[in-house]
Amino acid sequence: MRTTLSIIKADVGSIGGHIAPSQRLVDTVTRRIARDGENLLSDFFVGHTGDDIAILMVHHRGVGDVEIHRLAWETFLAGAQTAKDQGLYGAGQDLLANSFSGNVKGAGPAVAEMEFEERPNEPFLMFLADKTEPGAFNLPLYLAFADPMNTAGLLLSPEITKGFRFRIQDVNYVEGDRVIELDAPEDLYGIAALLRDNDRFVVESIRSRHDGDIAAVVSTQRLHNIAGKYTGKDDPVMLVRVQKNFPATGEILAPFATAHFVGGFMRGSHIGPLMPVKQGTGCSYFDGPPIISCWAFCVHEGRLTEPLDPFDHPFWDTVRHQAAEKAIDIRRQGFSGAAMLPYSELEYGGIVKILESLESRFQIVQREEFAAV
Ligand code: F6R
Ligand code: MG
Ligand code: MG
Image (cartoon, rainbow, N blue to C red; front, side, top):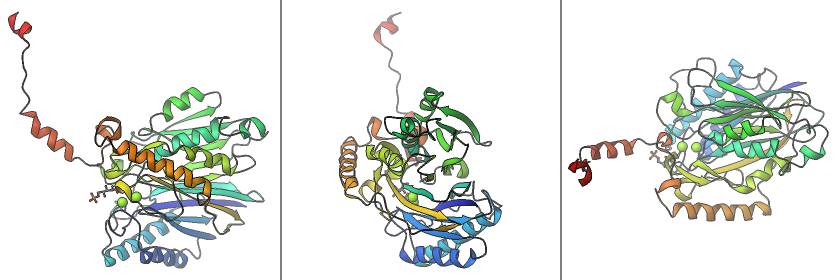
């Protein structure tokens, strides 16, 4: 059976700042998708992390289906109305388009979709991140799909020793999707050279080189490309199939123990460690830190099992503790140097005015030796 997983995510409002959606908002989204998705979906799940709500839709209509995208768009509109009624902060903030035009890509919400022939048992992971950007998945995906230091299966499992094909997108290019396909392990240095730059080059998808099957998909939409200015960080989502022809669940999770530094955090303008958190966790310290949460499912004949929470395990308490220490550490240096994103990636433009206002106060002071010539 060919099954499609579509995850569409948006921030349509939250309580107390950019912390977490209200229960009423989550209920609106859940009720609406249950009602309007009845004839379109074989199953669905609504999850949230930080101030973002994600709808995971299971269906048989393939990726980019107009009706599936319309369903998500209208569901988020209904959610935004609840957010307005309740006076939630940032009500409807990610719904940038005035009307639906066939696909929510380019309209504000983050989208990641994959279609595959269901295996007899089909385990997969859904990741939702908040206060960060799609490039936050670059390092974890590189380690999980290309590095035998992380993924023992690259040495041990006959299905995955053939390696994986990375499709990487240049997210600064706005005329269309500028992509490149590179094979691990042959193109390893090329993959690393691109994925080093989280702001610009982002893993869009990964396929098995054993049978060409889809392994992972990431949302690569950038809000500032759509709105023409920063309206919030892009808070990405990711789907990863696991086991057998793909890395094991634990091999996909292991890289998140690094709590690596990513862009996002306060005002989408700082660097902070990516903290693996339990499902439904909101944001706190310095509007962060950047968080990543995970839902583990099996899908069978289009139906989802109940989700498990892989980050709800004592092991991750240590990682959370380390991530908190890293966050406090980098915050000690405030605005200085590596603590903030480069000028081009700052979410807020206020600094431009400060710099402009200083222009006329600069003086060119001739050095004596020059003056003497
Ligand atoms: C980052 C984020 C928050 C806000 C900050 C200011 O993506 O959501 O850090 O940038 O709370 O929010 P506004 O500008 O809405 O007052
Ligand atoms: Mg927000
Ligand atoms: Mg968010």
